[in-house]
Every structure is written in C-alpha cells, then in structure tokens.
Length: 157
Image (cartoon, rainbow, N blue to C red):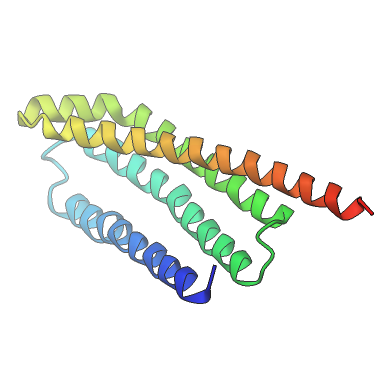
C-alpha cells in the first residue's frame, strides 16, 4: 500500500474522532450543566455510559493509527499488528457491552420522549461495535496465519 492510501486512512481515523469529542465533551457537559433536573438519574447513567464508551473508542482509533504506521513501515506482518488488532477487538467488544448495558435507559428515554428513532440508534451503535469486534477477530486470526506461513516459508530452503 502506498503512503497516499495510508495517509488518507489516517486522516479518516482522525475525522472519526471528532464527533466523539464533540458529543462527549461539549454536548454532554452542556447537558449536565444546563438540565440536571430534566431527567434525574437517567442523565447520569447515560453520561457515565457515553464517557465509558468513548475511552475504548479512542483506544481503538489509536490502535488503528498504529496499525497504519506499521503498514507504512512495512512491518504489517508482525506480532505488533496482531496485538493492535487484538486491542481493537477488545475495544469493540467493550463498547458493545457498554451499550448493551445502556439499552434499558435508551428504551425508557425513547418511551418517555415518544421517539422510537433513539432505540434504532442505540441498537445500531451496539450492532456496529460487535461487527467491528468480530471483524477485528477475523483479521487477527488471518494475520496470525499469514505470519505463521511467512515464518515457515523463511525456514524452507
């Protein structure tokens, strides 16, 4: 892969971080400050959930940047890449589990606000997180097999 492709992907990863920063830092702090009594109890649970979910999200984005750096340095077929994919897999699983735990709050909020779209968004984020985790696990296994085959071929005379 040439550097232009990985540069494009690095920029994309950085752009993916911006909405999370905007939502979790700006919007959630503003909601806590401006409307603490509008949804007592629930707002704090959702805030904790969003802030807890953003930590593995940023870790996964950082690991994706490291993986792209490994590709740039021609060490994509290494244990470093496998570790990065493993961390991305665990981050996807943890984000999915956090949103599964938050789904009851999403259902209650959707019922009170009469906004069923909230449920769709909550389920979509949960599903997407698990898809990323499964895809990361698949890539991790494929990369481990490729590394094993590469080392076997290096030993062949």
